[in-house]
Image (tube, rainbow, N blue to C red):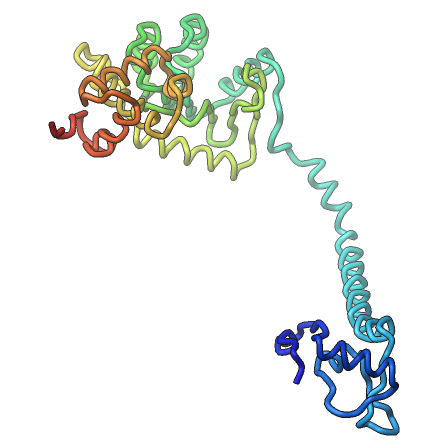
Length: 334
């Protein structure tokens, strides 16, 4: 019986067992042999029965045995290559038509280099906007001079019936110029909400054209102009999901700086701290300074009586503060 278990696997190529190699050596040295022949030698074609005496087996050179096994596979490969060539030739007949159509169609994505070009594209998009503009502005408070430049344009859009929805981060609620800007565009009909953290900057016009920053350029002097309906539709869904979770900005005296500037911001800081982010990264993502991040963590440490960030993270997990409700210290033992 052959000592190689590989021959039991259907379709497997067996390796010669020790007994098989000894029988093969015997056939080479003494000539055709009889008796029991290992299955591995029969499978590999290294021993073949003589035509005139089927019970006697003769040794076959390894290259000839391998050739007999490989030839059917080579023929199969050639047949498949021929089939691939036929498919490619048939499809290539439509290649010219495809290229012509796409060359004449509108480009669904364009890269805009330079602040001046991006600004001019935005102005034209605002002028052409007929029904809706969606804007996400992360990074906290905005430059007052930039707000003054865009204010007349956005008020004019509202007056001609363009619905505007804008997302900021909670930290704008503590910035006077941004609040004054929000008050004026809200009076014209725009809606503004805030979140502790935003995905990135986004502007969508009439759900047909979108601009996003190119993350490869830190100075934000490169943007992507997107007109592909599926991609624009996806970005609108991302915006709508964030909008549903955001808090409206109201301008009453008691609500201009609500608990969102304390509880919600601190909860966001602590959540990112628990995830292992540095103060600098947390500040960038939430739109506050590194010093403010440190202050939030320090106040939380004092509240919970922790002596390290690791202990604070543990106490936060025990208290459930990051899941719901206001910050509350966990019960401690002496």
